[in-house]
Length: 71
Picture (tube, helix red, strand yellow):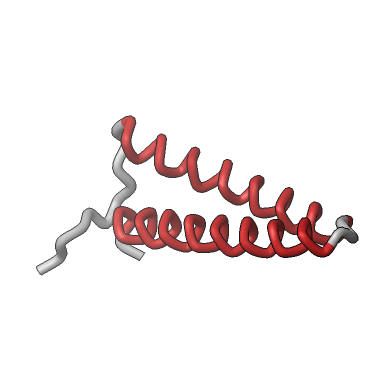
């Protein structure tokens, strides 16, 4: 028995989830760019934690999208 639909859901929740995934991906690129360009040790720590937090959110959102799409 399949718990999730095999075709993409077209409601606003699914669209919002995918939009959030795209925005999180952009935020992750920005976090990595900031990490590459910073030299202050305290800011290096900050951007490492920020990148890790955004990675975790991205992974969660991606898993949610995969479950809905049935992948």
